[in-house]
Length: 71
Image (tube, rainbow, N blue to C red; front, side, top):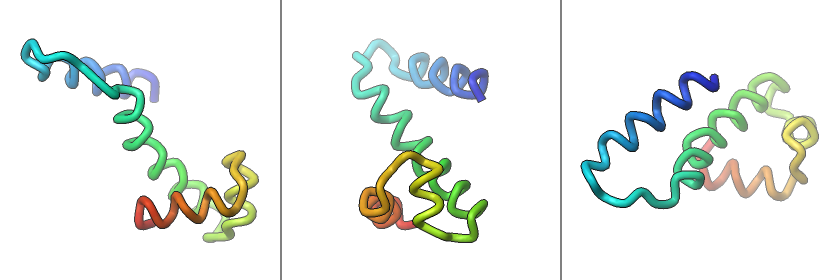
């Protein structure tokens, strides 16, 4: 996973063509977070309480993220 992320970041910075990078962490988190949440939800058969515990979130926050990412 680390190597894949490094390759994607390298591509992102290469494609800036001299422009200033900004909000890189947010960009990465916005790409990664829904994938992780969906994976965990699938592993626990969509049980949000169990998924929230595994993810280290409270259930309300998880529900907001599910809505945000339309999962």
